[in-house]
Image 1 (cartoon, one colour):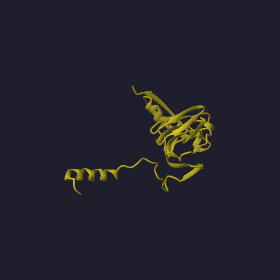
Image 2 (cartoon, helix red, strand yellow; image 1 turned 135 degrees about the horizontal axis):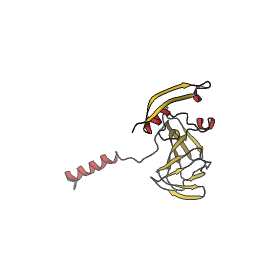
Image 3 (spheres, helix red, strand yellow; image 1 turned 30 degrees about the horizontal axis):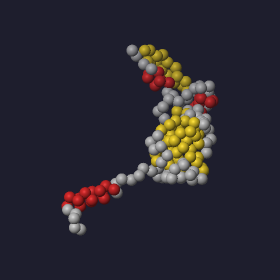
Image 4 (tube, helix red, strand yellow; image 1 turned 120 degrees about the vertical axis):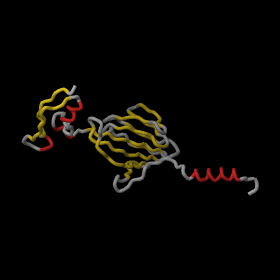
Length: 191
């Protein structure tokens, strides 16, 4: 090892050690708690992750999934079942969203609304990964009880609007519990 002094050896050693720490980003792996991979189209894997309650008004839950597309694959374009946010983690995809075609490169983000028609293509030579955050609307109550949001606590909403209560009571009317909780009270301005 002629021509390599201690300083050069140290640099080579640090470069070699740091190379092991750098990894390419990729889709997360699944486990028994997050669901399973499915292959809805040739060369495409849909990997579902968890779902949790949403804090965004009008949405009941939020969930996340990755669409992993091999080079040359495409995803079908049925109407979107719910609003969503899409983000390219790796590679790039050609997106046809209702006739508007654009290239979504790494870290590009866009949205789709319910019933949006969109098709994704991986025209590249590397795997492309699209992360989708699904926003699931609270439609169960809205569809059956004239637009009411049955998952909202009315007393909390009234307090958040700047009111306090002299009296607040809750009770159940006759009928199925999910549809019959009633609030009665007298509110006053907190200001």
